[in-house]
Length: 156
Image 1 (spheres, helix red, strand yellow):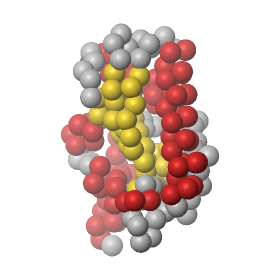
Image 2: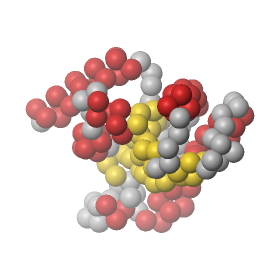
Image 3: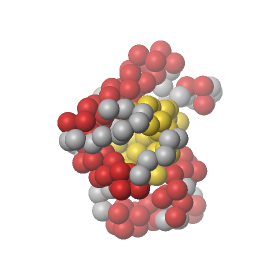
C-alpha cells in the first residue's frame, strides 16, 4: 500500500514536470526516475495470456476489439504524422506500450526506437504524437487501467 501511494505521488509529480506530455521514450522515463515496471504495477496487461487466472479481457474480445483498436490508433497516428508533413526517410521500426485509463483515454505512450532516427526528428515525432493523442480515446472500456504493447513500422 505504501509503495502504491509513493508511486502515485511520483506519477503526479512527473505529470507536473512534463505538463500534458503523454509520449516518452523508455530511456526518458528512466532518466526522470520512472520505469515501465512502476507503470506496469498500476496498469494491468491487457493480453489475456499474461494473466490466465484473472484476465482483464477474454481472448475473443482482445482479438476482435482491443488489438484492432491499437492497430487503428497507430494507423491514424501515422496518417496524422503524414498529414502534418512528418517524413521518416527510411522505414522506422518502433516498439510501443500504451497505458490506457479505464475510460479508454491514453495516459502514456512509451516507445523504443528499433531503428535510429535523427534526434531533431525524434523531438518532432514526440511533439506530433503528443498533439495527436490529446483527444484520442480507444473504444475500449474497462474496470481497471490497462496496457498493451506491440511493434509498428512507420514509413513515408
